Amino acid sequence: MYQTDPPRPPQETLPTMYDLPSEEVEEPGLPDEFHRLQADLLSQTCQPPNQPIDQVFVASDLNLYYDPRHPRWYKRPDWFVVLGVRRFTQQQDLRWSYVIWQEGVTPLLVVELLSPGTTPEDLGQTLREVNQPQTKWEVYERILRIPYYVVFDRYVNQFRAFCLSGTRYQELSLQNQRLWLEELKLGLGIWQGVFEEITGLWLRWYDGTNRWIPTPAEQAQQEQQRADQLEMQLEQERQRSERLAERLRALGIDPDALSEDDLGQ
Image (cartoon, rainbow, N blue to C red):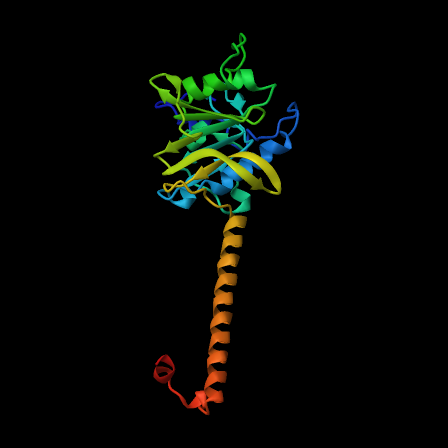
C-alpha cells in the first residue's frame, strides 16, 4: 500500500481484531482449570462504583496485540481490565482480540497467574532472544506502560503487585495481602473461601468498606435470604395477630369489629 500525505491513521492501515484473532494453530491450548476459575471470579467481582458499567472492559486469555511495527506479535494476559473502552452487549460485536492501535487505550491492570513454566517470564527473569518478541514483563512495563501489574502464585499462596514508577516497575508493599486502586475505587486482595464449589485462596475485589464484592450467584443468594427472612417476619406477625384474636374471642370480644387503633391500644 502506498504512502499518503498526510499518512493514514493506524486504524485504517494496520490489521484489526478480525485479522488478528485469539486462536492460533501453534498454541498449546487453553490454560488449566484454576486459570479459568480465577479469571471468572475476578471478572464477576470487578464492579467499579465510579465507572459506567459499559466503559469497563475485562478479559481473560485474550490475545493482546501491542506493536504496530510487528502487528502479529501479541501477549495473552491471564486477566486484564481496561477503562474507557466500550464493552459490547451484542454477541456478534464481541472482540476477537484486543488490538492496541485499534482500541487506543492500554489496560489499567494486568494479572498473571504463575505456574512453573511461566514464572521466569512473568517476573521479568528471562532475556529476550534476538529477533524475537519482547517478554511479557518488557511489554507491560516498557511498551504498553501498564500502570499496575499483579502476579499470584497459588502454589505458595503469594500475591505480589507492581506499580509503574517512571520507566520501571516498583514492587509495592502490601498490607494484609491487599492492594487498593484509587482509579477503580476498588481493592484487590486474597480471599479464602469457596468459589464454584472449590475451596481455596483466591484473588478477589473488595470495596471501600473492605467488604468483598459479591458474585452474581452470591447476590442472588443474599436476596433470597432477605426474602426468606421477610417472609418469616410476616409469618410471625400473622401468627401473633391470630393469637391476639383468639384471646379477644375468649374475652367475648369480636376482633373483626375492632379498629386498628383499638388493637394498638
